[in-house]
Image 1: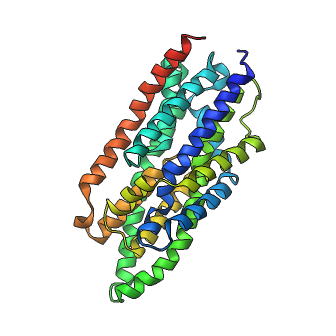
Image 2: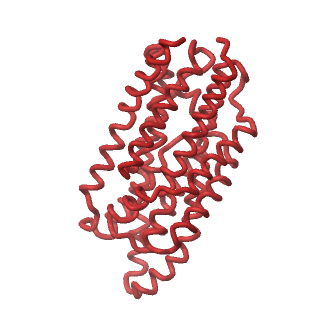
Image 3: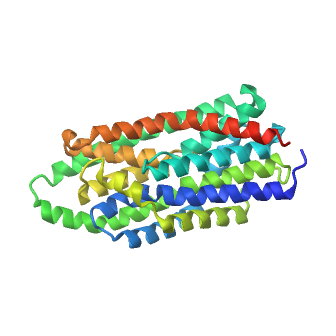
Length: 332
């Protein structure tokens, strides 16, 4: 269908706004452990994360190509651009709500759920690419379990290696190592999360017949990377507090273990071109590390609340996006 350029402009603005919010909403994912152990001061950690997010965002495009086409075929949607608008408004609302309450929910889950909900609201269940959508959900479920397991193993191995060493000397050494792992963590976050805004913009461009392929234009890569980096530079201190202190008391060796474990999972998913939730992966790594350190040290009540937010994000986002599309449809 013919789409006015002003409508495409609205899509691009909303996509970059989502990316900006994703930046400050998910900053805590990369630097919470580094800040909580005082390896870096908050402002220095946030600025480093912003730079590494930008570098990661412009390095890969595979996830961007996978995102939209796996959920639905934009070329076959009658109101594809308006579906994207509904999805982005829904995702932004959920991100802001969970950020306000300091809940480390997933920007990936809310975007994917919102896009699916808007497609179903517009086209019915037949509009969904069931196989592609299922494969994304599978990775979203498996990646936290893998991160928990790797985090547990890494921490257990390090605990065995340094069992007879002075805790003070061990933590002093790992505090320096955390600077490097936080940088890697931020880079990995950019390689996967910033791609989602790129993917949604390309989805809209294809739905509006502005471009025929799922290639990501340079201007899309740079603008999405900048939006996330700017958002990251603001920082999400409420979520940093939750991630860094309310799950268990993190020491430098724990932070190092969580960072290196989650970064490995995120980079593997990026190489496989699958969008996953950095929030879930990093939180699961922290839970795995805490369990290996001492199972009773983990505040499982807080962990339970986080898991509940994970479970409800996709269905709630689907409902919100579906409702928003129906409102938009009244004006079409």
